[in-house]
Image (cartoon, rainbow, N blue to C red):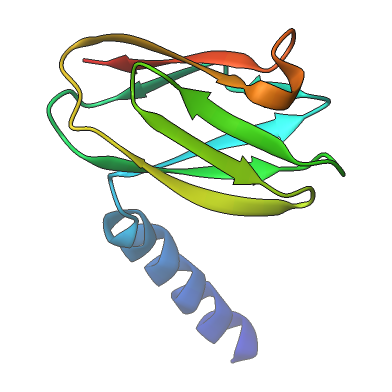
Amino acid sequence: MRKALLLIGLTGFLVIGPAVARADDYVLTIKDHRFTPTELKVPANKRVQITVVNDDPTPEEFESHEMKVEKVIPGKSKATVRIGPLKPGRYPFFGEFHEATAKGTVIAE
């Protein structure tokens, strides 16, 4: 009986879960002073939020002059950055504390 209930619950989560997930949520991870993924595709002309997860023990700043955003994310924590709406195009971002390695691009399409 327990297995049947677990299976039903898991099936419900798999069917309903993706529909409940917000379409405007994106995740960037900082590890070893690098952003992953290095390119993040978002819909053009729509405001979106990016969750930046810093897996490094030191802080990093998510910054973009083109998107007019900057936010410090302490080590071993996460923060939400809201961007847009953006016109179609490429918008570079970087980690100000490790500019040589922490780079990426938001692609609005």
